[in-house]
Image (tube, rainbow, N blue to C red; front, side, top):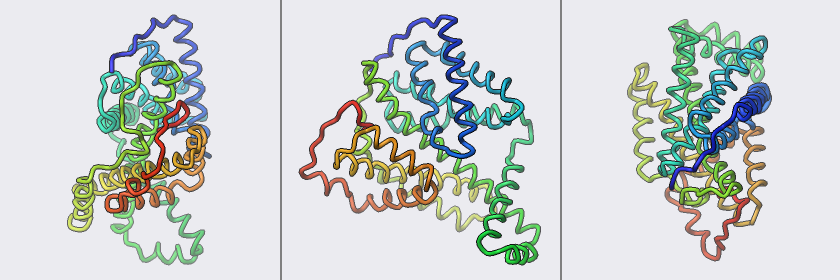
Length: 331
């Protein structure tokens, strides 16, 4: 794929880009407290701006939007939220860079995840210094866990559990919760990057730009050798408890589960396409499920994706299936 020729952005173009992207960023942050659906398409504007105006103008728009939100939303939006959501927004620039270079679907996803980690980690370290170790986040998530236990089993049951937990056991639980939280953040980012690679296809088709000849999303299958990574993570969790290896195994294991979840999602898209459900409706269904039943849906899709290693469901279903791509299909 050749690079898309951009046009030079005027001051007005930059100002409008910063304003619209800033508003979009604020909406994602505020709605994120009630609904995470908007996060799924958050990088899409930066894919467009990077393709049309080039690298330098896109970075200017990204930085301007983050500064706009930080300055005018300082009273009701925390700096950590601005950094996190702006880092997700930056995925659009990274995705477009990879698309222009014609990188594979898998490499584009990996580079997007690595880019997010570098930008997110560096930015949080700058504003938080040495305190960026998710100590506060671990405490908050642990408190939420306690509230969940109290709501299910009752306050007396929670008090009994709290009295039986030693300080060391409590710290061990908080440590595990922090690692799970970090793994969940990275898995969500990988999902967002993956989906926006396909959302970018809709932008490309509308604008008449050349798009890489990727295998259709509904035909994609997780690499077979990934199961060995899953087994290695399981071994790290069992045999290296309380060590850095255990922490890494937990985080990588969550990412592996997210890959199998994408495999399961591809099967679902295959089935929806088989019943000729239009692309926009497919996107709407994904967003609704993401909002209503994200944790349960993730586990079910991951199980489906893992089972597909042996069942190869789509191969069994392809007989008589008409392949007809159209502009509205998210592939």
